[in-house]
Length: 231
Length: 142
Image (cartoon, rainbow over the protein chains, first blue to last red):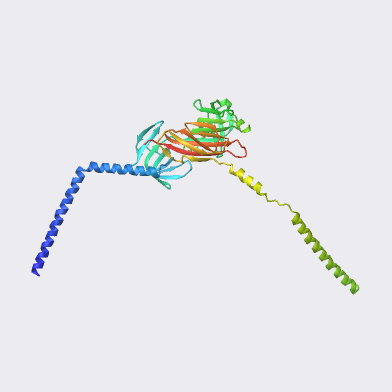
C-alpha cells in the first residue's frame, strides 16, 4: 500500500512538471508569434478582407442612394427617390468615405456627412439595412418628362406637367442645353426657347433637392414637338 | 243559369288554358331555334389572339436597377414595340432612335456616381400607348 502511494505521488509530480513545462512553452510561443509574425497576420487579414469583398461583390453588386435623414453614432438613415427608408451601418475600420466632384473622387471622413446630403451606399444589402463598405457623397439629379403647359417668354420659364401629375417651373438659362427632335430624321438638334410650344413633350434634367422648390434651373431639355404625334 | 251552361263554360276555360299553354311552348321553342349565335367563331378568336401576341411592352433586360459598374459605359438591352420612337435621357447623354425590331441593344455612357436613365417608347401604332421606365446605375471606381 505504501509502495503504491509512493508510486502515485511520483506520477502526480511527473504530471505537474509536464504541465509546468508545456504551459511555459505555450506562453513563450505566443510571445514569439505576436512579435515576429505580425506582418504575416496582417497580410492574412488583408487577404480575408479582399476575399470577403469579392464574395460580397458577387452576391450583392448593388448600391442604394438617398437623402440623409438622420445620423446617430455609427448609423445613418436615408430616404430613396421611391420614398423607401434604409438604415446604413458603418464601421470605423472598414467603411470608406468619398466625395464625387465631377470626374474625381476625394476621400473624406464620416464627420463630413451631414443631414439632407445625398449619399450612395454600397455593401451588403439585406432588406432595408445596408452594411456599408463604401459611402459616396454625390450630387443628385432628377430626370423627368411631361407636357409643356405654359411658355413664359418674359421670364424665360416653362411650366411642365409631368407624367406623375406634378407641376415644375423650369428656368431656361443660357447654360441650359436645349435639344429638339427633328421629326423627319429622328435626330436631335440644338434649339432655342422660341421654338418651344405649349403641348410639346419635354424631357428635362434638374439638380434635385430634398425639399421641392418653386422653380428649378434646367440643366438640359429635350423637346419632342407635338407635330411628331399628329403625322 | 242552367247546369249545362256552367259545364260548357268550365270546359271552354280548360280548353282555352290548354291551347294558350300549347302555343306559348311552341313559340318559345321556335325562338330558341331562330336565335343567332353570338359566340365568336374559332377563326376570329384565333386572329384576335395573334393580334394580342404582337404587343410588346417596354422591358429593360439589362442592366438591373441599382447596379454598380466600374466602367464609363454600359450596355443597355431592351425589349420594345417595333417601329417606335425610343428616347433615352440621362444627365450626361440623350439619344433618340426608331426601333426596327423588338430587341434593342446599345452602349450608353455613364458619369461618375449615380446615373438616372429614363427610357421611353412612343409606338407608331397609336392604339398602343407610350411607355416609360427609369433605372439607376452607379459608376463607382474602387
